[in-house]
Image (cartoon, rainbow over all chains, first blue to last red; front, side, top):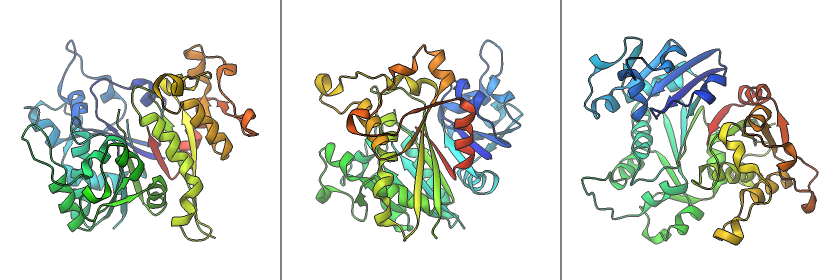
Amino acid sequence: MKLGVFVSDFKFTADILDRLKADKLGIILVQNGIYHATTKENGKSSSLLDKTSNLYALSEDIQIRGLKTTDVDKRVKVVNYSDVVDLVFNEYDKVAWL
Amino acid sequence: MGTLTIGCYPGLVGSMAYDFALKLADAAATKGHKVNIWFSGNATGSVKAHQKHLKDYSTGEKYLTALLAKGVEICTCEACTVARGILKTEGIEKIQWNAMHWYLAKIHKSDRVLLIGGE
Amino acid sequence: MGENVKLAFIVQKPQYKGETSRLAITHAIAYQTVEILLEDGELVTPTLCFIGEGVLGLQKGQNAMELYGITSTESHIKNTLLVDLDVLICKEDLVKYGIPEDALPDAEDMGADKKLQVVPFAQIQKAMEDAKHVLFF
């Protein structure tokens, strides 16, 4: 299964996400989820970023919070809504909002 | 082009997950995809017409009207809506009112389904 | 023959603070009447799965009607069994939260043969893989 997961909270729902198995896992950071890409807790990057190499963060949700794309971890690709639509239709066969 | 059905449960006022759902729907419709939106739970409060856009709150009405004009099908859970004191006659024109099986039927015909849950 | 679209409804939140986890159950039950909007032979078949904190809402003996005037999750769960839905409960999460299997409700008193199925997470993962769409509540 190719699963795209939307993460909308900074509080990491590791318990569920850790157990999900997918041939291809994508994590799309939206709303407060974008802090995983921009913010280090006690100097340490979010462990969410180690889950997969397919990481995305929504540009609009970064900018609304006063952050810049330059604040985003290098492993995360910044995308807009139009890109998210393409991810949903072209890269993953199922999508879930955690 | 594909079909995307979005289930939206968070309320218009108090959650920007609602705004995300509408923006995603708009982006998909703009790219030529068929989009359906199902409102359940607190999201059903957003189908009431004559919303005043106070700047601290989003307004659903102008976005919903624009989405309807783009061909997006929008349906509200009738039970959830009347439970919030909204009558069909007070609703935004062209938004459908139905039961949960509407959502399941749309899912049946969809390529992608995204459920954005509420609380 | 029309397509049978399988769905995995994954309940990951406890009941009662919010309504999303209850809506998972009532939406799943709605599969019973969806045929009125589909072509002959077309089906939608949800499998309702409880994982993580979602298993906390499954205790029997709930008093929602008496105390808050609302239908209990327990009653809704009984209805899922009455309409023959497959309901999978994550065994590891029951163990994690110390919930014994005999604390889960059944609908024997309503005449349902169907039971809640306590299964390893791997079986819930398989339900997600087998489903065309996965919906997290």
